[in-house]
Image 1 (cartoon, chains in turn yellow, brown):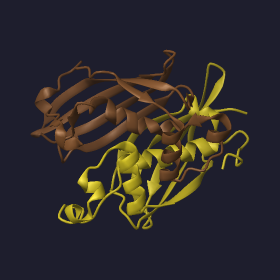
Image 2 (spheres, one colour):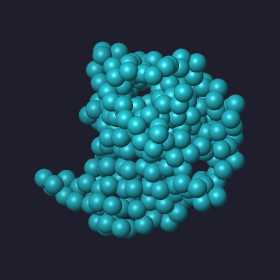
Image 3 (tube, rainbow over the protein chains, first blue to last red):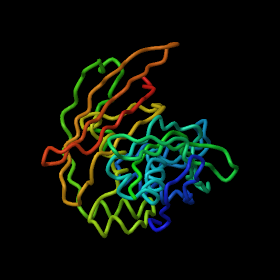
Image 4 (cartoon, one colour):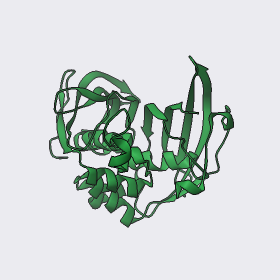
Length: 142
Length: 136
C-alpha cells in the first residue's frame, strides 16, 4: 500500500485492488463508530424478515473501501483534491461476502498545471457482481 | 438513542432548508476506531497524524440527523464526495447540511442533501452530496 506508486499512468492502467471480508462484527463496529444502529444492519432477527433476508452492511463502509483504494494508490493526490462522483449502491453487501474494490484509468486531463486522473471505480462481490460503482478523480503527484 | 428522536419526514423538507451546524471533533480515539473497523492499515494516517477522508460518510449523515431519525426504508441512491484538504487529528469540523432538491416521481419521494464541511480555521474540508429516496 502506498508503495505501489506509478509513473505516468496511461489510460487503461489498473488500480491495485483491495480485498475485504464483510462480517457482522465489521457491521456492528461501524454501527458503533457511526451511531447508525438501524436494525437492518445490526439485528439479524429483524433483517431475516426483510426483502434482503439477512443483515446488510452500511453503504458508507463501501465509501471507506473506495477511499482506501484511492488513497493507497494516489496518496496525498487523493486526500487533497480527490473526488468520488455518482457512487451508486447496486446490490447489498452482507456478512460472509468477500468484496474487492478496484478500478482503472479512463481519462486524463491537465488543469492548472496538475494532471488529473479520471477513473472508473467499483466494488465486486465474490460472484463477480458489481455491488457499488462510480467515478473517481484524483491528482497525480510525481 | 434514535427512539427518542422524531422521524425526519419528507413533508418537513424543503429546498434551502438548513440544518443546524454539526460540531464534530476528530479525536484520536475516533480515528483509531474507524481505521480498525474498516481495517485500513495505510501508514499515511499515523505518519501524518491525519484522519481518512471517508469519515465524511459519518459526519455528513449526522449533519442532518442531529435532531431527528431517518424513517425506516430510506434508500441512499448515490453519493458525491469532494475532498479539499487534510483532516488533522484534533481538528474540529463544522458541517452544514441543506436541502438542494426535493421532488416526487411515480409516488416516490426524492431528496438531495448537500453537506459543506470546514475545519475550525474556516478551511474547506469536503463537499458531500447525498441523493436519497425518502421513505415517507
